[in-house]
Length: 322
Image 1 (cartoon, helix red, strand yellow):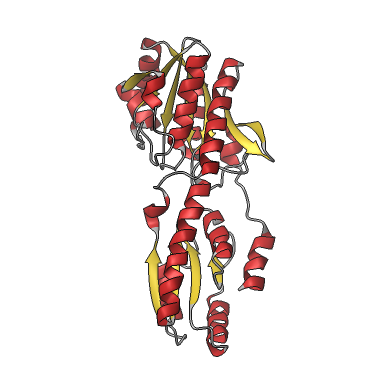
Image 2: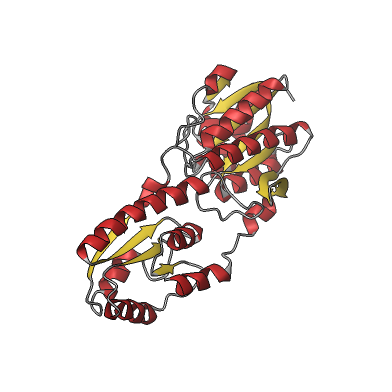
């Protein structure tokens, strides 16, 4: 192995820069050359490479987003696109790659390695959704839930001031980890997630009961992937049957940005170091994760096929504590 490259792919997540920094400096410390690939697989196809030194990653650990930028590549879905990517990697003597991304990035990596087994790839889980199998925490998740929590705390102030019901939509197209945890942390009256069926009538009854008991405001946290159709659609239905003045807030991409928390910086750095060590040990086709505080290696096939599941006790907690 001569050079180790690193790229970020899919949705950006706070902590990606910390992981890039760890990969680059660990690679250089071990006596190898480090290369950054801009815009993920698309940059690989276009040969958009950056020979990185230690100073290339100075003063980035506190930054959100990703200095290597990110993109989704339709070209990489084709054999011709992957052939171009391989040719560029070989022309630049790159035979080890750290891919920071989610299941889409790892799916691409798995297919690529089947076609070109001389390229070794190890993944680091970069997604705010925290739904990848093989790790307790993904890069960006801790920052995202704290960002959402702070935003909902602010919304509660105005909800209390005006006796309002707020529906707050958070990210989570396929998984409700963000919604569930920020709902508990902010004392929401209800949390709606893709993993459980939404009973709109029960929600209406709960809100009306709260109003009758002189609860002057309420917060309902909705994951964007909930089958009810999102916060706006749900609010339109609920306000027909509830006396509250009803408002909707979509937090959206606010949750992707911002300075990563201490835990995201530490976990991302630890995973970046572990990814380089895995490549140097001859491992390939695995995702680096952290389970019960220990670094683990999960094959891409498992990380892609399975997904973390919400603890049913958390759903019960919302009802108990609301």
